Image (tube, rainbow, N blue to C red):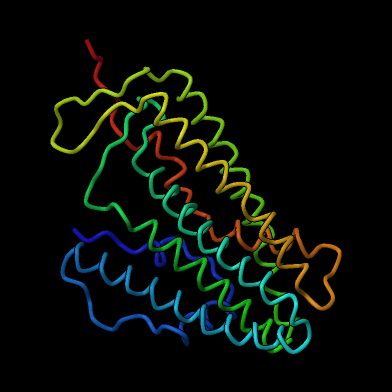
Length: 258
């Protein structure tokens, strides 16, 4: 049975943003015949949107160069940090699908990678859409999108914080060393060091939007007082993957270990 793309299941994309995404990278017309083929198509779509985002950013940088040439390097550095944050945040959400907070185990399955691809698609669509508006200076086009994202962002932010609290409690129960038990799929208890690494990545995923938003606002010709909050919300809203953050209830209970 095919795993449906999360774009179909969970999308709450504002129409103007969805329109930009579809124009930049029209969805494939062919129907995938397997999960493997579907996964490849999702990854290709994410890569297409990343390239479309880069083209839009190139135009935005040209606009910035004309008005504030000294700020171009700041914008380039911001984008590099944004790219790193997207990869880490999306891979962390993917991992949340496979980390069982009840048993403290990490497993693996054929669906690995779908959340990460969909997360990247959302982030690159948003950043490309924003860059296109930045380049043209049509700031009023953002108002409706920001209004649509405010509520989902607040819910998602709280879900991420709640998930982190649960993950910290699981980490506190972790053994010093990881153990592998017999299973049809790769499955093992996470060690204290594993949890430390995972929680650090989760912290960076949660903290990233505010810092990135603040730096973006500093590049704008005139930034409203709520610029940082609205832009941070726009990044958090793209991390809305409730199924991943409920992963602790999706895996079977772990067997007692000797």
